[in-house]
Image (cartoon, rainbow, N blue to C red; front, side):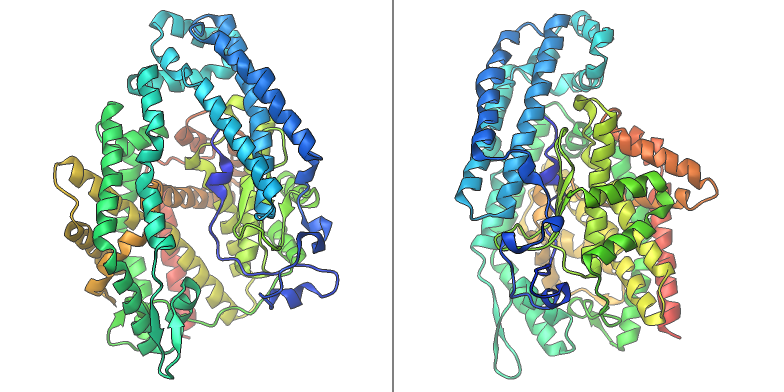
Length: 631
């Protein structure tokens, strides 16, 4: 079954509430977060048309029943017969049909559930679809072990048969993984342990969310302030330095209370990764995870090395802040102070679409036209409504539109989120149109390239068209912090988890002191001399959920690096060829390994050039920012 793109693209974004109703203009709602309309009060042109997939619960359940009673039972007849070309071909066509249908019903149920999360009928439909999905997984659990244990002559006969050319890529992957696939019984046992293996991530959520006791502080007027995330970060942006310090200390002390429990929990997560790698005959946890994604380990190591060689621009940006505010010492709780006032510019949804279309013009008429058609064809569910999921994502199955859920709020962040998610959806559109089902799904390593390129194009357009120095300062600072968060922060996370895994693999325990000291050392290195990194910062690592999706965060940095490399080529002297190559990349899906897919777009992630190029751009942004700020 293909990777669930909904899970990949659900972005936990901070979205304000804005919407269009018939009684008040959009701007009124954009400034009143207490007004959240019911679903039926949002204009139909701003809602996706997911309901067209199934017009009733009866039609939805009829499709579930067809899959469950007419299709899935046919799978058993192929057990032990996959070495026969005709049997393998028939089995593959059957499972294609099942998966295409299953993803449609699952996607539909998931999307309507996200629109009305308290609707019991919708929740039941999602549970039914999920249950059928797991039934399908169980029925097909024999396939990988059977293929991997097949004798070489029979396997090569499958690979070389012209009638199976659409499945050659899948067979290549099986062959590459042959030494790492277990017997049917062993795979089944590991599958049963799945929930136990993922327990550290679940426990982390319980400790940091469900059981977290939110600290309370008192301001200079005697008012009690509960430090929810929203209030905490607003305080860190306020001019009251004593209150910032108090809030920071209260937050890190709350982390400290659970440090031993979270250290033991993370150690168990690392152990699980190492044991899984050993069971599957890999040299290390890192090599195991990267191998499963067809990524050479050298790309990971080159990324970390390149970022470490380019820390000077980040340190310079921090120094600019320190000098601007006149701090003798600048602490972590000072770094959130805005260097310039937040932009008051607001964009209606239609204005945002217009700006994005102009910004994406370098991608050519076809891309812009297809983008515009997607907007007018109800791909996007635009505004917040009562009980709607409060994030953003792109989701589409092979035979449906590439739908987008937003909570558009008339801000620049809202505009960029639309550009980002449409990047995913355009990628899905071109891939699904160009590739057979089995190779239509693009891998996680390349998934964020299309979305990030759209954001880079929009920011490039806005910076170049800024009308005042204040507007340009705001946009430059935003882009600086986009890159800082996407590259520098994520690579620091990547370094931390690599050190943790290698330490345990070398037989050394992951004690709280070791984990805390490692984190603090990395923070000081990345922050540089202009920030006084207090010892209390050592506990912050334990609150980061990304560490339970092991060796994942580095892909944010590689994706932005690849996207910027493509942007440079499009803006260069061979721009037309670069656009042609990029559109071919968007259409390539999973038909080739991810590193090879990026080579189609002219990007070689085996070299340090993409990362070095992005960080050179970061340096230019910092220099431009300093020039305008010190006028």
